[in-house]
Length: 479
Image 1 (cartoon, one colour):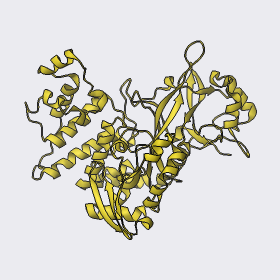
Image 2 (image 1 turned 180 degrees about the vertical axis):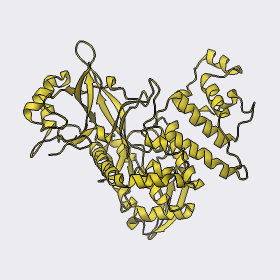
Image 3 (image 1 turned 45 degrees about the vertical axis):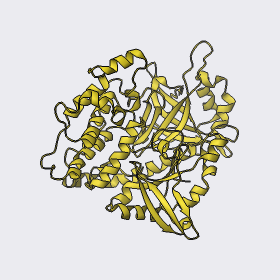
């Protein structure tokens, strides 16, 4: 499992894919079903399924779909169920991992035993977490663009990618264009869009009232804010001159426009993990509790997302954080994120604790993404110099510079909603120092949360050989 990506308890593709990918098994042959992002299936008749690698099945899917060579890097095979999602390495053998699925669930999820016993993964052909957005901008094959569009659309509609209302409407308008064709004045009307609103906008923006008042209001011709905003955005979708010769070809610019808009989301293309964090203490007794979060990890950084409120709590680029994970035998696995912040105007170090049995997976993925980023840095100037020849000059900026965010945007960090350990080290300069017992005492002394749990916190920062060190930003805690 080293180097794989996982997710547990998240909405999205897993919710509609609780099914088996092996429909029949004989002595030597098997019919394998590989699911695409639009929920269609690619049936494969294969020999010696138990020994087949993910790379071999990936190649078979590409041949059936007649995809170009770029699909080898753009997509990967995933094992997906409602409880866990794992991106496979090329050398992995999907059949054998499927047979070990219950062991993986027990190791990486908190699912009840009954759910573990009933769970069964499906094999899915999805975007590769390690495929850079800058390379996605260079794709022109319409089928590859369509598959990427379908997956991004599913993540937006499932609110796995939190979006501001304005962005949801702009993205929904492009879906209208793909599904309904060019906008024609008066058709469709906003009320007609209302009937299919959940095909264009996330569910939390499609909520309608119940009861007599809602029924009476539904009979009228006046549209609600969701459908009216969607209709206005639909009107503004631009058509590309000279592309009307073929309907499918004319959709490629809209697939690309949808993906470019999604590129503005800092967590686009991430692997998602389930976890919980402590709520800020409230009241005289400082009672807090825990809240569920999604941890999104991509080539660009880490984002902690409130699973219920559908907004970002913390977003960090790799150069802005230090991290490690702990797996005490008697405590829940934890991912630790350390970053700079302030407390009432005073610069401090902040330490966030994420409870998750997938902490090991998250830590491995962070480490690998940093390695890939460091390896790619020397090639960046050459690629950017060659970029205008292979892609429109207006395409690269969304991936080169941070986007200006609306005030209160759902993609902005809400550090004030986090319960962190805050501490100051006046003599540490610009580098991390040894996390000694004396230093831990100082950290815990200034944290109300840990005053009652010092023995636990001390144990979490230790291992069998000694204490952890903190080095420069972008480094994991190392011994």
